[in-house]
Amino acid sequence: MGKKAQIEYVSANPTGLLHLGHGRNAVIGDTLANIYQKLGFTTDREYYFNNAGNQMRNLARSIFARYRQLLGESDYPFPEDGYHGDYIIEIAQELIDLYGNKFAEDNAENLAFFQKYGEEWNFKRIKSTLERLNVFQDIYYNENTLYESGKIEQLLNELKKNNLVYELDNALWLKLSQMGMEEDRVAVKSSGEPTYRLPDIAYHIEKFKRGYDEMVDIFGSDHIATYPDVLAVLKALGYDVNKVKVVIYQFITLVENGEQVKMSKRSGKSYTLDELIDEVGSDVVRYFFLMRGVNTHLEFDLGLAKEQSEKNPVFYLQYAHARICSIFQKAKEEGIYLSQNNYITELSEQIEFDLIKKIADFPEIIFESYKTLEPHIICDYLYDLAGIFHQFYHNCRILQESDPLRQARLHLANTTRITLKNGLQILGISAPEKM
Image (cartoon, rainbow, N blue to C red; front, side, top):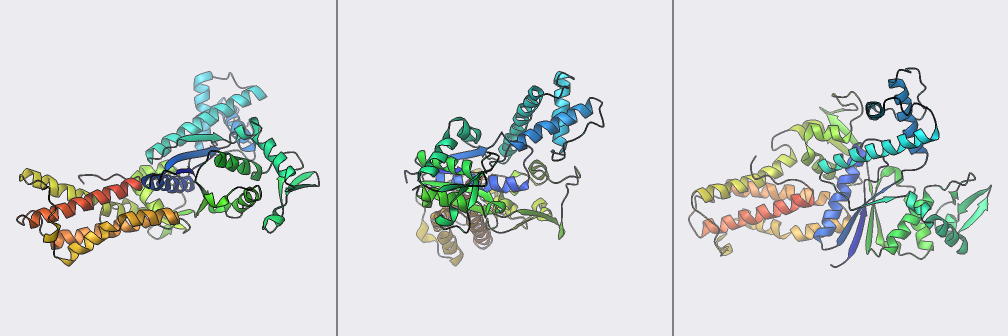
């Protein structure tokens, strides 16, 4: 296509470990980026984060409190809105192991050091979790650069120049009611602090300036009421908002034996993404996060995810691929190799025609998945393809036949293998040759 696309996903602030919602965001975004690439787009995979503000100050204060407690002050007060995860204790212990009580004094310099250390520690963990899921990003964009480079100031001037804002009660309001929205919203609070809308608008202007043909934002359902404001302002400023595609995904519930699972058996705390990967493997996590429509609430069945049988859709797909590989391994042992000619006219069984037709649908399926921004379409397709192949395998002899029918069926099996492998690759899932 020769077009440029940008997919923004994960975008978790470096205040803690990734949870299941982040995981679904990461896998949807990464798979959509794979789809865009498969269709010939030059694709930028981007992570937008904020390492300033209250969240980060709370992180520093939380680490500092645990640090003082571990140094022997067990009654040192923990911040009311601090981060309670065990990882905070881990970071504090690491700081003691490295520096002893060097940072025990409660001052701005020490807190700034703890904030930086905590941010880097969390980012390292976030990136290593994403790597386990086969998720990588090209660009990490820091919201703070929008302030440092004067982009927020430029945007405010632009909004004033275009008469899109007004002052009321010492706050600056966006005239969203004049842009087709229900009510006006605050852009800058009376304290002088911008609301999230301002940096989000400035960030999207940056994306437009880079010249993308399409930009995809992956947001959780908690953003459903807020992103339209950003698009309305961009439109009022003259940007083509049709280039911005927003994917809103629903959250995840873990279930086992029909019961909701809230806590990990191992840690006794809410599941982290790492714990889920440890329990069922990254291939299963990716597939299960993708196998329902993005806007559908996802019930992640732990029992099914752990099944090493055809009940588990990931096992079912990978087994189809491995089964075809084993046919070719056996053929090689018998001195049988694929011929140049595929002898397709030798095929006459209905199940063979069904398989050919299903394989031929694959390019259209990828395009449909791109148009609707729904990766589960590929999951459903591969599951059906594997099902038809398993039927073909049971109904049609392959190696026991003589040529040219044997060659025709070998070619059909090989084309199925390639299609399964390509589909699994788009989903970011491995295609094992043995199981």
